[in-house]
Amino acid sequence: MSKTNVAKKRPGTAKKKMWMSIAYAALILGSIISLIPFLWMLGTSFKDPTNVFLDPPQIWPKPWLWSNYSKAFSKMPFALYTFNTVRITAICMFGQMLSCSLVAFGFARMRFPGRNVLFVMLLATMMLPAQVTMIPVFKIFASLGWYDTILPLTVPSFFGSAFFIFLLRQYYMTVPHEMDEAARIDGANTWQVYFKVLLPQVKPALATLAIFSFMSHWNDFLGPLIYLSSPAKRTLALGLYAFQGQYFTDWNYLMAASAVVMLPLLILFFVGQKYFIQGVVISGVKG
Image (cartoon, rainbow, N blue to C red; front, side, top):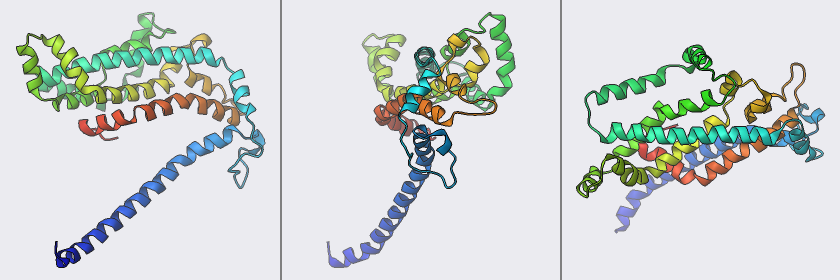
C-alpha cells in the first residue's frame, strides 16, 4: 500500500476513533448512572436507620452494620417465602418454555389455513393492557375455586405468551428448512422434528425466554397480592412489602432483604448472558 493511500485513509480512521471514543464515553456514563440505584441499595443495607436520609447523603456507611441482614430475615419467614417463590417460578418457566416452543414451532414450520391471520391476532393481544382483563380473569379463577392457591399464578403459563412465542418463532425462522426435510426423509414425524431437530437449535432463544420468565415471576408482586391471602403462601415480593408500614419503613432492613432477593437474578443473568444476548440478537428482538 502506497504512502498516498495511507494518508488518504487517516482522516476517516481518526473520525471513526473519535466517534468510538464518544460512544464508549456515553456507555460508561450511562452505566454509572444505571448503577447509582443499585449502589444506593447496597449502601443503605449496611447503614444505621438514622443515616439513611442524611443531607448531604452519606455514600459509605459509618459504621458498617452487617447485622442488618440477619435482623432483616428474622422479621419474615425467609425460607418459606423462598420456597413459595421458587415453586411458582419453576412451574411457570417450565410451562412457558413448553407451550411457547410448541406454538412457535407451529407458526414457523407448519403450513395450515389462516396461519398468518392467527399469528397477527396473537401479536394483537400484546397491545391489550393486563389491567383490562384483570377483573374478568379474577372472577373466572374465583368461580373455579382457585383463589388462595398457586393455580391462577401457574396455570396460565401453560397457555403461552405472545411475546415469547414471537421471539421463538423469529428464531425458528433462522433454522434452514433442509434440516426438517432431511429428518422427514429419515422417517421422523412432526413431534420428532420438533423435539430432536429444531428444539436443540433454539437453545439461545430458550435461554432468553427462561431468563425473562424467571425475572417476571420471581419479581411478580401484583399476581400474588391479588390471588394469595394466606400468610404461609406469600412470596418474597410480598415479604419485602411487609417492611413498608403506614407510618414508618425500615429502609435498611428492606434494602438488605432486597439485595439478597435480587442475588439469584444477577447470578442467572451472568451465567446465561452469552445465550441471552445471542438469542435477542438473532431473533431481532430489542429491549
